[in-house]
Image (cartoon, rainbow, N blue to C red; front, side, top):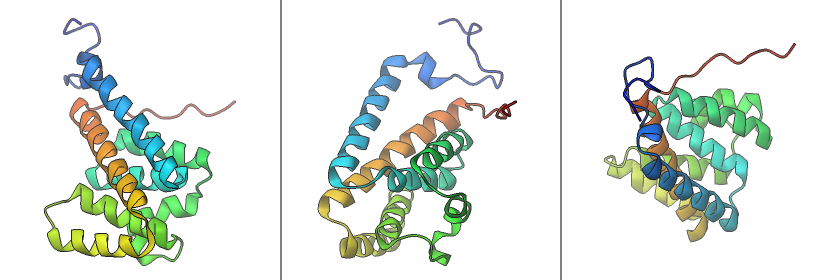
Amino acid sequence: MSDTAEAPVTGRVYLDKQSPKAFHALVQTADAVRATAAEAGLDRILVELVNLRVSQLNGCAYCLDVHTGAALRAGETTQRLGVLAAWRDTEVFTARERAALGLAEATTAPADATAQERAYDAARAVLSDDEISAAIWAAIAINAFNRVSILSKHPVRAAVPHQ
């Protein structure tokens, strides 16, 4: 690929376009993680909540845009999406969702060992080993995609209103 043919306006390299084999491997990993989550019994909404919370923590506008739409299509409500950043201060998330969100945060900021232990203990109370593993893998996968999008500066464009 030439440096000018598909170069983003930001001057950044679109990592997914520049190294398609590596990006394709990441997509395949995400596909495997989704299948693992489904096999473990984690529904699509819970996985999208993990995707969104990790993307909030990382400040990834592109992934927030993509996964907000995915969550809405899966049946998530705007109320819950609106309060997701403050999930601990609400009563709108189930114990399983709260456990997965805690694991997602611990995966995204692994240096906080105390928070990681609290998250793991809370998850143990309501999630099986398969569900814990699937939730952590979901957080690992979206963290990787966040880095690709943030470092590529993937744009978020305004949606075209229906006419």
